[in-house]
Image (cartoon, rainbow, N blue to C red):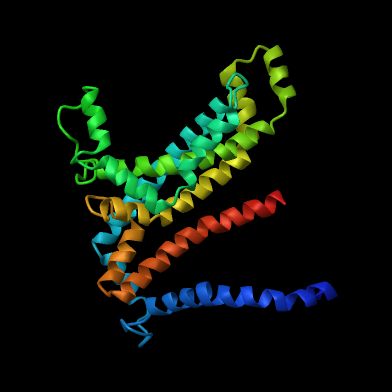
Length: 289
């Protein structure tokens, strides 16, 4: 049986790690334990009597919960799929040898990802607004629509609008990751494939995609976790109305009306979903190591 022992240098480093450990415990571990405790409590202010699974039963019986789950699934799948497809397409386009100023184009596109979420949501809300919004103005000028579309105030278009913004924000991240992967691919394999008469599609399906499987997995997993936990963009643009209430919005709305125990149960459910993908991500990284 192996015994865990610290080296002299590791023992010297412990006092320097202590402040970081304390801050992590204070800001992450304590709130996490408190939320978990409140989800099993029947007291709305502090941890009171043990309620068992009552709060979770009420959550599953809440008519808003299935709708929030279905909205979250639609929102997540759509944003992950289109972010990956568009990001990968941009990476392929910019990585072409004939494209000039590749660094400039990558930086220009990547700006969309590094802009703070609140700024992005506020700017796009103005672009999508029915009263004088730039999107409606452009579409009307091109003759594509005859009257303004209520992008953010109609159940038919609200979900589409926030998906467009999330894809616009996440696709640059996918582009950067996939570009890095493309630049690491061995050119001799493509040369051999060309000698064998392989076309673009065969090279894509037999060389590019298989060799980029690892980085593709990371991109999909990261955009998926971001989509599940996204709050500010949805709240600023639609406040969760018009068929855009996701699990994050449901948790916030329950906290807002001081339904603390149900909100805690909802938050725990969201945490479990996120943790599943986080564990997959960590296992993948360990496999790579």
